[in-house]
Image (cartoon, rainbow, N blue to C red; front, side, top):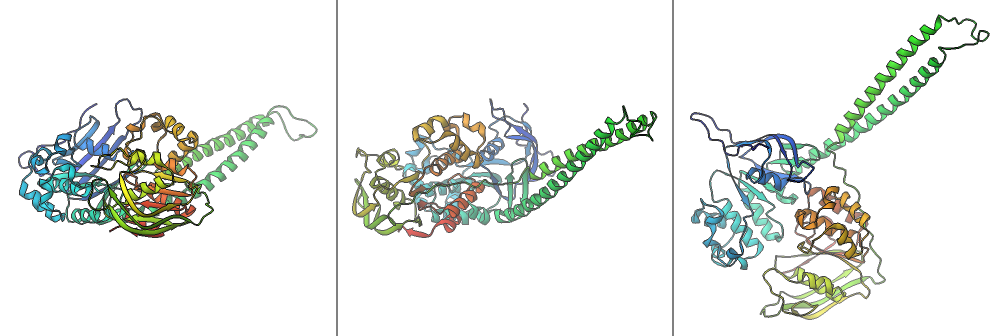
Length: 542
């Protein structure tokens, strides 16, 4: 396997094109039978704001790592640009230090004053550079990393899903910031972010790669038109193939009947026929058989053309859900509820009041750390799902205090759930997913064949079912949790940031599912478009 070149030194007097040229790229992970990329060629301009789209597991992060030179491949990647990658890795030792102490470990050419300028554009405070990194919120960490990333000059920047786990305000800051920049690839499944920040898209289709001018919405509109045309052409080809098959069958029957008349005849019935007519009938039959053979070849060409039209067609399967009907209309009753963690002075939230009625889809909305996940875990605990709380109640940067099955919080006010409430829960954390699919289904009492069928409908390849889940991408892990929830009949579906890392096509597929089956839901999701489509009511956390 030969390595393509990354940095091409220009010769004296040579004009350097600001492009990345990918030529006949083929790559597969060691030990894998399937190629991630196979004989792929395209070019992109390093002055673009490039959105990078594709299904989970199709190779987006892999391609970024190929640009960084982390793997060997066949073909070539030719460019004069240097690359830098978001997010930076942070060691355990660095977590205890302020970012100001290790910025140069992330980016050797980093100048502190430029980081301050970029941080200001991100509406961040300089003081975050002097606090231990572990104490920063996810939004603050993202801002520091982006400020360092953009503090250099002439780098082409590889930005891999910068808004996962960020609240709406942090997302808006990142969106405004990236919209003012250029010279990057942005891997994201957030449609709002892609529309605001990109002027070109690079799309990994099922069997091809598109490079197109415009943002996500422009590309999606064009794709819908192309798909509609492909369906119409497919229908036309299918009808034509049917007619050809019918005609070929008729001619084949005629040829067979005539072939049978070459030998033997009744002189009384066939008084006008002689032995000499055998050669004539044989020649005529041969011509008919030749026409049948030509028709068969044409049919094969038509079928191949039809398959070519449909090779990149996205036809997401209609997912199914089996919500249960509860005998009570009010499933959750919250009145003046407050919660404070042990050792904390201020409550994580206070005076929260709302009801969740059967058939409602209630979105919890607010900044990171405002108590959305804490409320969800309190509700799970009240509904008797103590094991789920025990497995997931440890929050980032917070130590458990040995409270058994409960959360380490003191609550006041009313938090009640309907008796006998069955809840299907998706946790935002995927770190508990280990082992194979078979063991996962057995532990949760899920039908393995149905579970795998749902994963296939979410476009997960069958080869993934043979791997351990810790080797899945984050998007694939999320699909495991979503499939498990969809397969669990419930009165109430509680989903805590279910769409982090989930690709655009699957998001649209899940939206369609929820609007069709209209389950009762309580969910947290920072994807603006998903929330606007799905929520019947929004609870704002201050």
